[in-house]
Image (tube, rainbow over all chains, first blue to last red; front, side):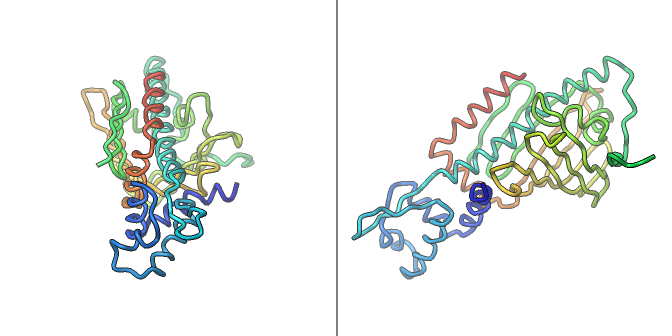
Length: 128
Length: 165
């Protein structure tokens, strides 16, 4: 639960760095060794390894088991979570606005709109 | 870049990079649409997915005022909370909005929502624009996600929106 709860935040944090985004973009084309990943950058292998560690901890990258070169590959699930999150946001708003349209129709059909509170709602349980 | 046209005849939705724009025409004047979107007595009647009930816990509609709407009676769903930044009745509302989706994150990245109400001779064109601050990250994640088969999520959403129209 907590692990799941932290996932989206970890994904955002991991992708906040442009080098790590470039690594993910490279891995989207297929797996690669650390040496291959380091090639396009003016960065040392330890620095690349540090970035890979962050991506691994965020669940975006996994390493192969072969002892010699252990290729890195992309795990797309966290990216899907971000897209799902946006889709949920859209879905929520889309349905709400649909209901709002119906509600406005009802309000005008009745012509007796209940005068709604304009300010703060009264906290429940407040004694009068 | 990652431009997605979604929605249907009544609701147009465009997701582009880290921005989301929805347009909808309501058959009611702006003053009424404004009231329905800002008064707690109205909001709980329509906020949230079909079949759910919302509870307006806070709705202080003025610059700096806070707002929070949660599913009623601790029901399942998404709570939204934020702060009003700009209030020009009945034309323009700017607020922050942080959705809290259980199991996804403590709180999603806060969006800045700009809602404008255009008078079309007694009807209202509402433009709902949400911009996420972590733009680089979000647009990148969406772009990469798209190439990894996320599109079906959006197809499902488009299908859903068509069904409920």
